[in-house]
Each structure stands twice: as C-alpha cells, then as structure tokens.
Length: 507
Image (tube, rainbow, N blue to C red; front, side):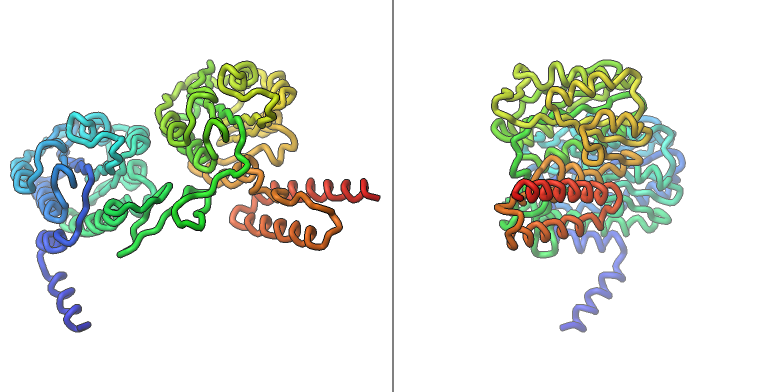
C-alpha cells in the first residue's frame, strides 16, 4: 500500500503544474467564500510573464467550489488605473470565468497597488458587485499578485481593508518589494506573504493557497460553536481565544472578567503623530481588551472618546450592550489627526463621560469607574489639574504610552501606585504584550491578590493557598519579564503588607 502511495505522489509531481492544480482541485470543498484576485499588469510585467499569470489563474479555478451559494470569484487588474475584469456577481460557472481571463489584455502602465486595494475594498467587495452582506459572515479574501514596488502608499489602505474584514494574501514575483508585501498582507505574515523567484514558479503559491482554502472548509462546513475563532486541523478542528483569554472546559467559550461590573471609558489619542495605520492598530488593541470583558448593561459598560486638538465622544457608556456591538463601533471610528490635548480629554472624561446621562451607573451602586488613556506623545496642554480631579472623583485611571509618550506625564495621569497603572510599548506593533498587564488589572481575579481573602492569616490552608497563587502568578511573568514582573512584585508587596496589618490587628 505504501508503495502505491509513493507511485501516486511521483506521478503527481511529474504532471505539468496546471494539471496538478486541476487534479487536486475536486478534492477541495471551499465554499462559501468571496474571492477577488488583484493582478498587477504594469509595464514591468513582460508579455510571457503575464501569460504565465493568466495560466496561473485558470489553473486555480478547477480547485474552487464555484457557485452563487459557494465560492464567488472576481478578478481586477491594475497598473496606473484599475480595471474590473469581472465582478463577484458576474459568473457562477468556471467556463465563463476562463473565457474572460483568456480575453484579458494587460494595461502596461505604472504600478498603483494602493489604488487597486482601495478599489477592491470599496468596489470589488461591495454588495452591489456581488459580495455577500457582512451579516452573512462569508469570508472575504483578496489575493494580490505583483512583480514590483508600488508607486503609491499601501500600508494605510491595506490596514483599512483588513479592518473591514478582508483577508489579504500578498504574492510577490521576482522584483517585488518584500516590505510592501508585508505591509499589505494579513497576519500572521508567514501564512499570507509569498515570494517566488520567477513567474514560472508561481504555481507553488497556487498549490499552497489552494491547500489553505481546503483547511478553512471544515470550520465553514460544521456548526463548530467556537466563540472567537475556529481553526481546522486535518480532519478535525479546534477553537481559539484572543490573546490574554483562555479556552474554557467546554472547548468553545473563552473566559472573561468574572468580577466585571465596571464602567470603563477609553480615551484614545487621535493626533497626527499617531498616523492612520497605527490608529487602526490602536482600534484593534481596544477590541482585544473588549474581548476579555463581560460586556452587558449589568456587567461592564464601555465608552470610547477620541482626542486630538478637540475631544469627541465616539460612543457613551450606555449605548451598546454587547461586546460585538462595541467592537463594531470601534472599527467604525474615523481618525481625527491634529494636535494632542490630553488635558482637555481628561476634563471631558471627568465632566461628561462618567455622568449618568452618558450611561454611567449611579455612585450609590459603587460600580468602579475606570479610565484607560492611550497616548503616543507629549500633551500640548496642562494635564495636572484634571488628572488630579479624576482621582478626586474616584476614577481609577490607567495610562498606556506608546513610542514617544512621556513617562512623567503617564505617571501623573495614572492612579497610584504608578507601577500598577502605567504601561508602555516602544511602538504600536508591540502593544499586544500589554494585554496581560491590563487584564490582570481590570480583571481582579487575574491578579496575585485575587481570591485570597483569608479566613484567618494564620490558618495553614489559607497560607498554602496564598503561596500557590503567588508562585503561579510569578511563573506567568516569565513570558514577559519586564513590566509584568515589576507589576507582580508590587502586587505581592502590597498583599504582604496587608497580611502584616491583619496579623498586627489580631495581636
């Protein structure tokens, strides 16, 4: 039997590459999927290379489960302009698609890749062009094939496309710029960026891409029940949770703050120094925080304020009752640019954001009020007065600094002790490591002191329980030994002081 399998593999490898795609195709059931190919037809793509790209497209089609209720395919080509070869709604038969691809005439001008991504986002993936509505949750995938460096900016528009739920594969051939490919592609980059030495080898990407479509099939084809993400693994699948949250015993749901009765207002820096692509990363980071909160009218309420030279409430505490609604609203926030008036933002938070008119719960209910301030630079106005007022009003303030943020300002904004309320990342791309810090602060059960209210400090089982929790928490700091270790040690010191006070009071 093993010998027969080896012969079959050898025959498969000896087939021409287009035939290989056709042979493997029928075994892959891909739908439903909205798939748009974005093809570089600039003058740098020579005629025989463009012909290879044409054959590459036609070779992929037999492996797709094409149909109105399965995989819909669209193709656009670009150079200095963008041209729709055929939209998602045009064809439901592979034969019609192949005919349109055979008739394709290259544009042979410049290389405006950013313009092509913009067109794909706004036009090719629109419902009018045949894409399924967002509420149907059909995956949207764009495959960009290019041979050179873009003549326009791609990072910002690609970030916008990804924020709208478009998964981007970037395929570079020969002279393609790797940095531009990485700026366009979806994470993880090692699964979405492909660089091949020549157009003759582009079939290697075709085989890998087709296998990825096959992998996604199991999660699409079953009622997996995963709360956050389903990942196919061969003939099985597993559920994943966002970073900072753990899978529960049911294998499907993710844990949240159990002590999550909080009114949380996020103040996000929208100044021009942030830049559009980094603002998209901030929005993604905010949604990762939302993922571990128990968002509900009775649990955690979330509000969002953006500030630059002025302050704008994007949505108040009382507007959204579920995490999904909050996350959708965060993604829709538009970048303001201009200056950095952090003091003005703190004043707005104190005077308006935590008012009952904005959805905050009455003080008599003793629901914690928490402010989370994101900033990437020095404030252009005074922060001291309103930072102090926030604390006087009982608001617990966390300060998250990125890049050129000033440590002294962060410490002045944040509640005491600063070691527990200040976080810093050197750039927007590395903010993710702060999630565990914030989770341990906002979710009390994640900290060292959580759940260790001792019946008596001298009871043996109580001391053992405290020791176990303490050692476990310190072990978790090994993955991020810098700020998290300092925070954990500060928490441990505070808890030990509390125990000493309890012992002193009993004497």
